Image 1: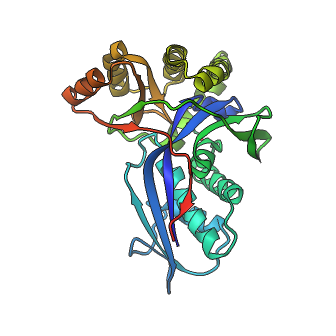
Image 2: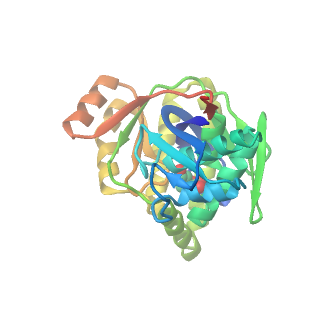
Image 3: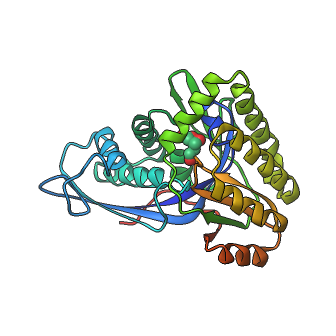
Length: 307
Ligand code: MEV
């Protein structure tokens, strides 16, 4: 049974969402596939699994409650630890294929098991990445109730409502720094910052305010306001300590030709999200810096079964 799952970008609110503040995310048209068949022994890409390299897939397998050995084959058109939700995409694909084999396929069930998997591997997580790549489209995650709610997920006293948000189509460029940031380490770095600094929670709340202010501009396609909010969100992410010299250099180089640009995802390298004003000038800049980029658009389907 084969599943195809998109990648995602976080438009606003990464890290703050772990503390219950709202985030806005979108599934994008880069994909991973996970193909699972019954087998005599548990294999991942023709080899016995190694928890060091396959922690997400193995945990997803365990949490899906699938009792029989399987062969899991994974392909992805985007890199791990690039801020685009690679682990969420592969986790969701694994759960989707296993639930399909056992006749239990539902997006809500996939999103719940995939979140439990990320939470357990990362030690701390929000359902943003896993729910966005499961559902597809534009997604809001919020402690408060949301219109068009898809599901509600709770963990350790924090409740996240996951809902659809009708984002106007956006032309986006994702620039990849090529530097791998470990989400688990970055989430725990932010946690130490927040617990050690008196104003740590203020930064988290301010990011939440930015996400709230971005809802209407995203629905209206107000590029000027979206861009300004991206720049403000990025400054706060830098204060949280998840910036990186190279992503800062990329952002500074493209900003004169953009409505806005920011780190997307956990940071510490990873990817930069750019809302272009002059697309060709940005592409020329990125190429002159030797930076790999993708022009991306919204994926509306989320995880799908291919066979
Ligand atoms: C990573 O893509 C998003 C973070 O907010 C972590 C999470 O929400 O689990 C950094």
